[in-house]
Amino acid sequence: MIQLDSDPESTEGTESMAGRLEAIWSKRAHRGPMDARESATLIAGKGVEGSVGRSSRRQVTIIEREVWDALMRETLSNAPPSTRRANLMVSGVSLADTRKRVLRIGTTRLEIAGETKPCERMEEAVPGLRDAMYPNWGGGAFAKVLTGGEIRVGDEVAWE
Image 1 (cartoon, one colour):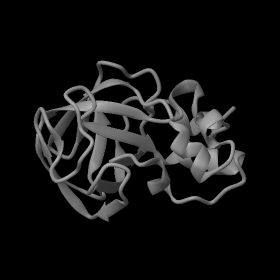
Image 2 (image 1 turned 45 degrees about the vertical axis):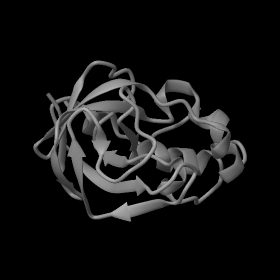
Image 3 (image 1 turned 90 degrees about the vertical axis):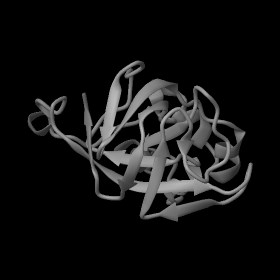
Image 4 (image 1 turned 60 degrees about the vertical axis):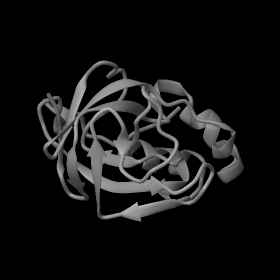
C-alpha cells in the first residue's frame, strides 16, 4: 500500500490549493522512448502535439510526483518518473477518484476520463511496481483535452 509522507495540518484545504506541472514527456513511437520537454502544445480533442499513442478518450496521461516517490520507496527503486510512460507529472494535486473533474494546467483544461491501470511494462521496469501501482489510482489518470494551448514545466495546476 502506498504511504504518502504528509502532515495532516499541512494538507488541510489542499482541495483549493494549486499544484505545479513538474514534467512533460512525449512519445515518438509506440513502445518508443519518452522524450522530456520543457513545453508542449495540448490540442483540444487530440492530446500532446507530436506524441503517439493517443485515443479519443485517452488523449493525455498524468501521474503525481508524490505517488511516484512513494512507489519508489515501496519498491526500493530509484527509477525515473519517465518509466511510467505518462505525458505529464503534477505535484500538489491528488488524482485519485477524480473522474469527470476538470484540471487546469496553465491556460489549458483537461477532463479526467479515468484511472490509468499499470501494464506489464511496469513490472519489466521495476519488479513489484505493477502490483504497487494498481490500488487507488497509483498509475495516475488519463484525460481529454477540453481547452488546448501551450503548457510549460512550472505551470500552475489546479482543479476547477
